Image 1 (cartoon, rainbow, N blue to C red):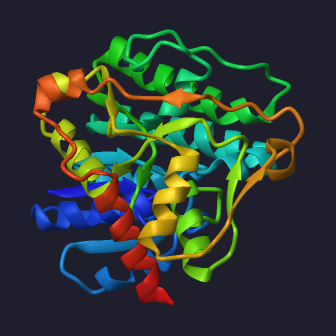
Image 2 (cartoon, rainbow, N blue to C red):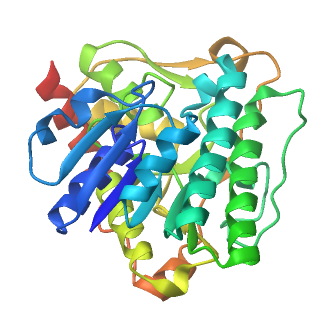
Length: 321
């Protein structure tokens, strides 16, 4: 079988591609390399069953040709990172909404099962912890660019589930919570690789806000295993699933742990959101996934804790220095 992975040269996508190849799939990657990187998949070039096409999911003709050639689709292509969302909101919205519309239309035309990766951002400013798939989504005002990404991804979910409702297109929605690991960069504001890079260089580790916000980080290998597991389960069709890890840490605590793991003497510096992003930037204090739904269906349990994750990221960045 040939599987299409849009955004397959990205951080998560490239790990998913490796996983699918190991499972015996042929894999076609569609990626315009705008946020993905060729070096993420360079080691796969020339290997049997792997093909990369450099083009955008916003081109409907290219998307249709790719979908026609494949038996299933993982749609990961998207704008990524809070910094990109704030700095380039038009690109963010157009890439997410138009790209997903193209993929879903092609999958509907040829009846291809499709898994759509969404995000914990869609929970917005919800305060019920942990976040469950059926909880209300509480968004901020449209005048705050921070919420453009969350609203665009929520629209993706609505559209995917509408295709399931109207024509029983086999769709699965996976809401990812802070996926981290080797190959992730801090280019778009991702906190773990940014902190590790600063620690390894002995630079101040810059914590945005007061550092008391709490997050849960999942290893990319656990996440890609969960994605593959959902696509193998027909009972997942037409449903939404959280994927992540439920081990919490404050961002200030994360900075301290990274300073120890890297053996760094870096200071920790608090940076106001207005300086890091823009005036009026909003953030959530806690974001914890309820993993009971996916655990019940597929048996998913994250196998790597935060210490393991940080060691992997440090090892990866050290090898590139």
